[in-house]
Amino acid sequence: MSGFSRAYRNKNDVDFPTWSKRTLVVSMALVVVSGIALFTQGLELSIDFEGGSSWTVPSQDFERTDAEEVLADFESAEGARFQEATTADGDRILRISGQVDDIDLGAQVGEALAAAAGLEPGDVDVTTIGPSWGADITRQALQSLVWFIVLIGIYLAWRLEPKMALAALVAVVHDLVLTVGFYAIFQIEVTPATVIAFLTILGYSLYDTVVVFDRLQDGVQRYGKSGHYTYSMIMRRTLNLTLMRCVNTSITTILPILSMLVVGGLLLDQPLLRDFSVALIVGLLLGVYSSMFVAAPIVVLLKEREPRWVEVRERLTQRGVDVSDTSWVERSNTAAPGATTAAMASRVRPSEGDATKVGEAPPLSTTVGGHPPRPRKRRPKR
Image (cartoon, rainbow, N blue to C red; front, side, top):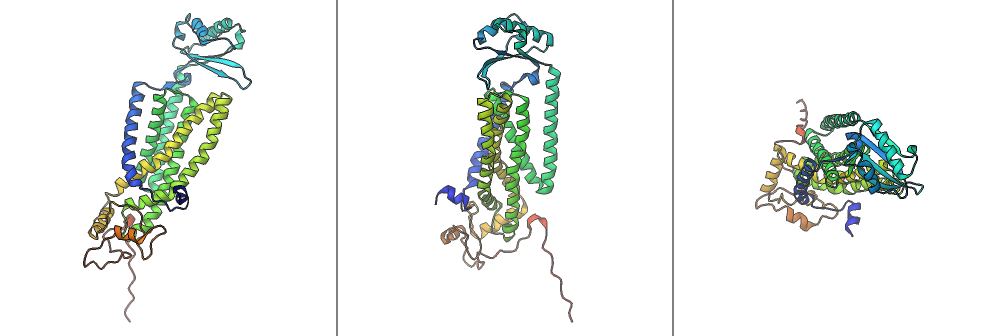
């Protein structure tokens, strides 16, 4: 049976704990690189944030060098950016953007460009945005991000548990930093559509994380009380069971976004669709990665320090169990599908004189979730 077939039948047993140790190092390195790129190169912000003017010149033979000669007469238009594109009708256009935030001066530059291209003044589309509008958009985006993180953190702490909420928020920040770093490294222009995509990424990233953690809680309730499994073993089992669900969900989400990028962004040359779809694709891929290789190992690191799970590891070690081997084995009278008797024997090596069977769980001084078992009522003597 191939690896994909086993994954679709929930018979896979990928060693996620071992991989997580490597991926956490890679993630930390990528975060550092993204931070360095962000502080050294900065983001390529559009005029919507910095303020300025943009001019669209519809001409087949008006080149960048011609536009630079025109802009040389206007000092405030120096350092302009150029982009050639083709409309849906097949007409060539030249987009020019510069730091001209005065409406009258922007109109004068538009008239000069129209004269140089042999067009009427009204044929050149001029858009001027003041710097105050861009600052207001940036402030609102940051406020939305802060409120989102606070409210989501409170909800996850209530719905799951605080340590899971912390791990989920770390994964979200990880995705945002790497996405912003991607734009800083490759100097891709950041537009309002990109900011909207950044905020949308947060929801997709949390979706996969919540799916994993919800399944993890079920596994802890089912297997944690027996005392036969460490938290790392249960997490490994959970990640293998949710692997294909996260992959299938991401694929079905990325496909329509990819079609929007190809058709709307590349064929029809719509900058809004292109900026939005590129940011979403990058964020979605990072969301799947962070759910399994950032959020999950952080939860394991936090939970394994709890007295309950420390005691489980110690008792399993005393019984001759190799707790570093997290491969899944059903600790019951019958093994799970795919688990062999040899695998169970290699996992559990009882010492001499230990009469405890594999399917029996010795009593623990602590309980899962901190809830003690309900005492039985004593019948009154007759």
